[in-house]
Image 1 (spheres, helix red, strand yellow):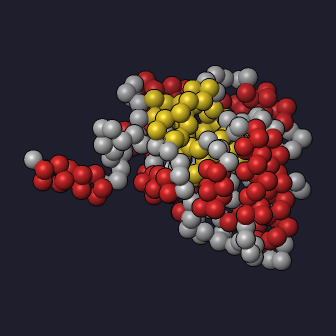
Image 2: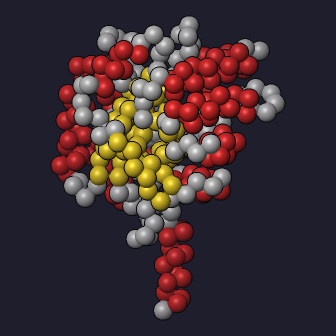
Image 3: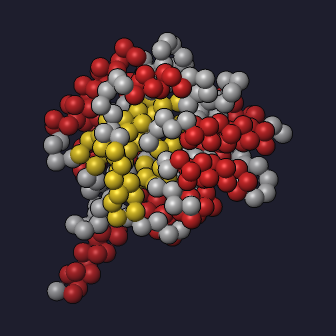
Length: 287
Ligand code: ZN
Ligand code: FE
Ligand code: FE
Ligand code: ZN
């Protein structure tokens, strides 16, 4: 009997995609759809993989529409009903899986009222706040701007990013903020102790009570590291900031990607709880 149990435990470890009956996987709240023009697979396909990998809850968070054509990597306003239909289709097909409805919203200073308007357009379970654009229009994570990350401008870009990120948190528009140290995506970081950048953001999270995510997509980028860095996570835990763990899947195969590593990291810095969202109400589950 003992050896059977051991073998079963080993099988679970060998196949980190499957969770044991008492070991709940994180809900994956950051998944995209083809409506943003750079993701593949429909919500039903993501849902199918989520079930295969032992997840009990997922949420879609595609890139938010803007009032008019803004760039080429977000859903258009006219596609919003289609987005609701695709999520409803997945809910209908997989009733055993809890499927939440969210959006990944770009925080752009001066456009806060648009997010407020979006917030009233559906019964969202959560809104994620992201900073992809800096004042002046610089796109933090776009490959065409990579050379600027390699230049002497880097310190300035990071300062601008974190200032904007703090503003996104203090706007109070979101349920949690995404990929905290996104500017490291291409593998270039400023010199020295980066906690000088993290500190104001963590303080803003603690003061406003907003949550953030571990986003495992960083592991799939040149930086080869989850967002955020361990030091950020440590500071956030010490400050009592609530946490979610998400994949930022842009393809069904990425659902729940590297969750065992993310859980291990969160636990290593002391996290014992994750938060979940339903109709923009937050609840706590054991990690
Ligand atoms: Zn995307
Ligand atoms: Fe993003
Ligand atoms: Fe995303
Ligand atoms: Zn994202």
